Length: 216
Image (cartoon, rainbow, N blue to C red; front, side):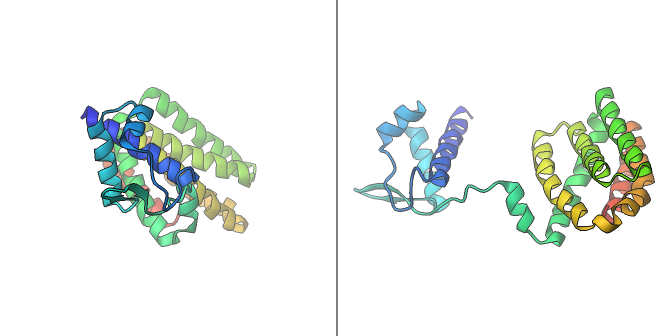
């Protein structure tokens, strides 16, 4: 297990150097002894990392000549790639994330999580009552992120936070209808928060599906 982790470390470092341009397409990567010294790992770890990158097409091993960079890696944040994606595809993935997040939030939420969820819910309502679109957008996103954090799954949290950039863009495009949009869905948000407080997974799942079906 330790060797696999070390191999992943080397893979990440090499891909980072390729993405940043330190290692350009067609250039030879450092020799095994150099890589061993640089990353403080053994020869088997270096060979495992190179093999993995060669299989994926990032590197090309030429017997007798060395290992060369075979393709470029775009150093682009996930949030940027998501902005270019088709909205229906985004919504499909968001649906999968939201359902798993509320399920785990029902199981793992703490009193601190509940306080955070309810605080953002209250901010959302105040923004609706005072007709403040930007504050409502911020509170709505923070409300959903607080539920993601209550799931206690770090990978899901990271993925969901990347999705918030796309969600924010969606709200911006609907600016002319945002307050009516937020107002119509607020009671569902209140019920979702209550379901998480009560650890009612079935109700939470039904509510998040209702929100998704109505593009909220």
